[in-house]
Length: 230
Ligand SMILES: *Cc1c(COP(=O)(O)O)cnc(C)c1O
Image 1: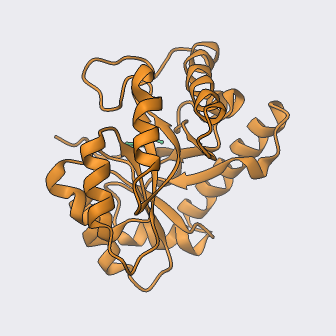
Image 2: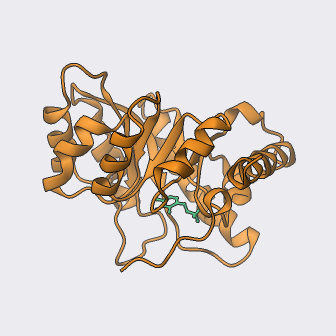
């Protein structure tokens, strides 16, 4: 087996153990491998090991990679910041956009989604721990934004996504992730038909699953350490 296949196996085992510890069915949690900064060979190796969805942060990089892997039926998730001048690329080249945090961006994605493609699956990114320099809508504004996004014809609102700062220990991680779970439950109670709570990465996926995540986005534990990016 390749290193990537072995790494995937251990990440799936981590997810299974975390689900068991939390008394959850392993089928409630999806793994999204995050292939940013890694080349098409790495994606191909993970694909060969059974993965069919990948997360990418940098839109230009992702589109080039997608072109090289066009023969593979992969669902690409945009999980990085989306500027207005990139919405057309996201609308045309991704199955999901998880990092929607402004109505203007959502409107452009809906308008620009090609008619030949199914609706773009969308998560609202929420700045759950109030990091000052971070993307994401404030928790108190998530419901209003979600209601607007849910009305856009070419988008399918699926849930919320968070990227909390790395918190120290397990309990601190769980505390932050529980706030996101509470917000997700609140939006569902308000009538939004959400099924995706995207939270948890290499360092905190156990805590995220404990708190009720339905999708963990994992890069480092699968593909290795990324070179620093400026
Ligand atoms: C890079 C990234 C990940 C994966 O992080 P790892 O710590 O490498 O697992 C997940 N989500 C987002 C939004 C990212 O940018």
